[in-house]
Length: 122
Length: 368
Image (cartoon, rainbow over all chains, first blue to last red; front, side):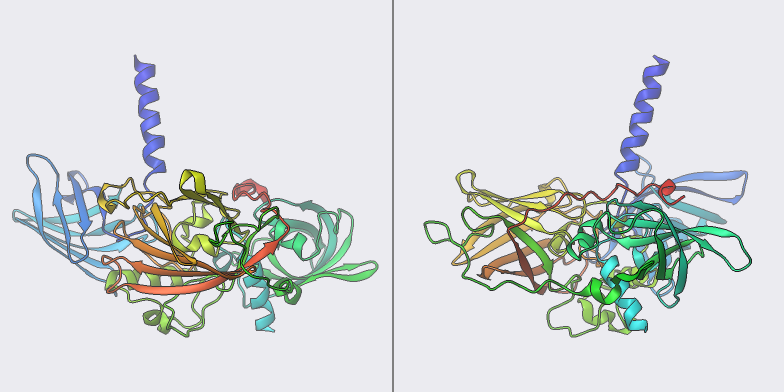
């Protein structure tokens, strides 16, 4: 059973690794990471974003407790991304832009707390 | 002199598809002259190499990997597998790697005993003279044939353009897709702001992230100016046309001509070549396609697109030796309006597409 689980997990990893390339809008896709005030106090984030031709829409932590994004903007000269959602404001810089595993690194504010965040595109 | 080196870069860069793109790998503004003895000839796709032991100043010997181009391209220019052998004394002018590795891109190659020039950049850019053009071949019912005339062989080879810009644009673009002047970016295509930023990033990074360099398929219009040609197989009884590609990964694409509807892009399984239906309008095949994925660059300069991409392609054959390709790009998520480009492709008579695979020497251990 353990071997079977391992094989299935390995197959999943191989499959997903081969399907990740994305050369369209740089924000489109699923992003994962965390935020927090310090290294030991981190909160996981999953963010899904999609470009519809006019605006980037999406949610933070999809599921029953999802928070819809209210505004996403990018300064394309500096690759600075501003993300707003109910109770959340984040601003970061996009890095490793040419990779499908590009990152956004910056500051995150939520519920009166502030910290840094890193999101990596899956 | 810079033009000479650039010519060699373009000639070889246009056929190379594995590993880093040529502009990202080699520093075109520098040159090295290497005198030494050939230790090995690696006659492999997509990039052939000659390895040369070179005595450095001070005495040590280094083994240089000289990239000489694509074997199929070299053969067409008269450099055969046996032209250079291990043990030959040679003199090479080449473009060195950006990372200062013992690796370089060939511009001129001499055998030194007896002295004879094997290859030069100017020779590499020379194209075979076109054969006399006859009328476009036709099926018995009068419809133009996109493939060979009945009972003959041949395929579509070199394109008049190897990168794509809006037809009205008269801008200087290298064959590998790099703009001569980045300020011309706004004339390449009617970009949305994000698409312009992505395009400029790809240009500034010398196309190093090109998916084709990782041997992924060259979908969209790029398939019709990828080196090593393509062929139409018109299966009229099955209501479809197969397009067989000799470059990139020897893939194929199906254009249905049986009258089926195109369908909706949102319903299609996103793919590199999309879903295509075609119809004949007099002597032109008009093909509409949707259902593209976002995993490829639709031309070698790094033009982006989204899954909303819709292409209308028009293939016509004004004479035996000429295919006219016209394409309208409609992707409202990437471009502010539909735009078009066009080029021609030359017929290669009496030959079949030769075997070419992208990955034969892609592994990092190939060089060392």
